[in-house]
Length: 65
Image (cartoon, rainbow, N blue to C red; front, side, top):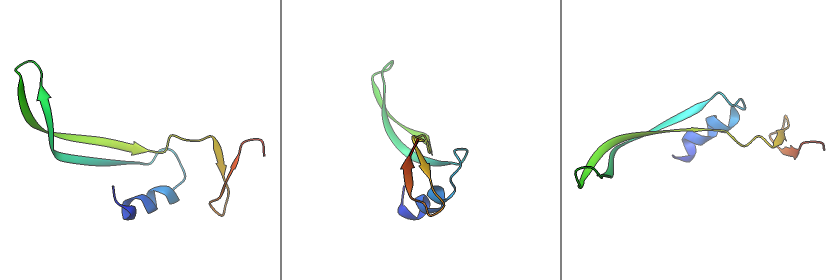
């Protein structure tokens, strides 16, 4: 993930937004047949840390502050 893809992601403050990153040449091991294979893998990234409140000027404060 690059910084340019993270900036719009962080400015949209709802937890529903996610970014999918695809690695077309993921090297993994086939344990059943003892071979090394190349697969396509995709990962979803989203905001999961919500222990702080985000203010209007994008600063954060802890709950109960």
